[in-house]
Every structure is written in C-alpha cells, then in structure tokens.
Amino acid sequence: MLPIDYGSEPPSSSGGGFVGRIFLGFVGYIVLSVGWWTFALGYHIRPDTAGILWLLMTAALLGLALHLRVRHRRAGYGYGILLALLAAVLLAIGLALLIIGLCAKHL
Image (cartoon, rainbow, N blue to C red; front, top):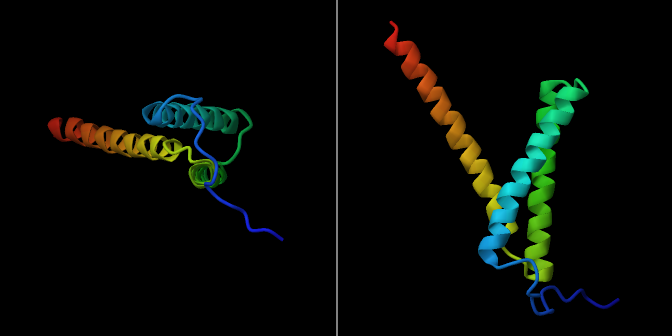
C-alpha cells in the first residue's frame, strides 16, 4: 500500500484567492446555519437536539475545511467559518449588553 501524498499537487487557481475563500466560508456558513435553524423550526426539532446537531455540522464543516487545506492546499474556508462564529458570539454579547442597558435605564 502506497502512502497518501498529502499536499503534493500544486494549488489550483480556480475559486478566487485567499480572501475570496474566506468570504465564501463566512457567507456559506451563515447561509447553512440559517437554513439549518429554519429546517429545525419547520420540523419541530427540539432546541437542544437542534443545537447539538448544529455543533456537529460546524465540526464537520471545519473538518472539511481542514481536509481542503491539507489535501488540496485550499486555505481560507476554515477562517471564514471561524470569523462567522466570532461575529455571531460578538453579536449575541452586544445584544445582551444592549438589553441589560435598556433594562437598567428604566430602574
């Protein structure tokens, strides 16, 4: 059995540059997440089950991005996914602080 020669092919030039792949990872992850939660709500999947399955989907997408980087030298998709996660966390923190600020104002 011959060993798999990871990363031996030269990277292809299709699909845009590094920044384009980051953008595709960012937007694609947001679209998939919104689609997943719409599907989960439409089929009345319990929120805890939907959340666990969403985390598994995220882990699978990050694994696919790592595979694309190692095997095909196509870096950038994972960074886009991680940036989308960071943006979602910062948005949630910002909304929580806004609600706390509005509630404290009326006390």
